[in-house]
Length: 315
Image 1 (cartoon, rainbow, N blue to C red):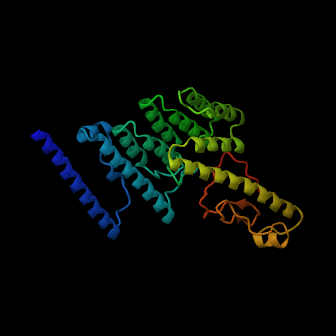
Image 2: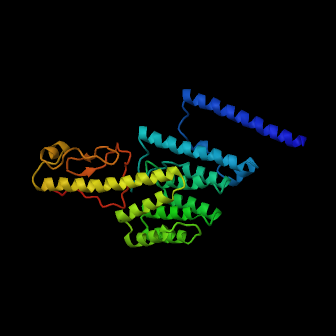
Image 3: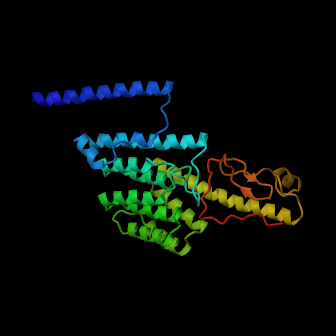
């Protein structure tokens, strides 16, 4: 009994000290912001080693590493918004844009193999195109497959893998296969079977993308995922609106009207006003008459696929 009380007391004292240290660190960081994350900040890369060090506190350590992963992702993303991002390689891939992201997520899920949010959020952070994410759909699939190995009955991970194949890898056959696999799991929603068929038949079509995101929004168990689906649906709306505005611009150009600015088009009667996207951010119009989403829009950048962007005809 005495040893148990001593153990409980030690845990309470440790918790108080940890809380105090966190408060002191938070106050310090308000006055002196921490330096950008570096490779040196991840000095433990083995989940097995960390589990041995944390003994019976692996779940707590997983929480701490998850917080670190979120801080790292948010910090790097914010820095890219303020500074020049890393130079891109041929094809647009960044040079080690988020080098610690996957190792941090891997450690988190090694410490707690049932860490659902880390798998689902983490896969989005990894797959999201640069500079908003690591642009690594391959690592997103690897992370989700790791979660699936721990929980073979988790149809959400299968759906998410299909989602990665569909949206970022544009491999509609693989996406359909994963949706179909998810549909066979007990408790999976009814729409996965129809989603598998639609993806296979109409992969790359904007309407099939809309169907997929509506399905994800309907099945999301976390508000963040539901909000992300809402954002993707707004991106699809923006793409549709760009097509409509581009058609108006093209007609005005064919009629001989100047199309180098919104003011020209409004004076010519082609438009009633400056067109805006679903967030009320004005679209951009380049001198050649091509309509684009503004870089200032919360919806930027639009996915390259699946969409069929109309461009201005060549003079």
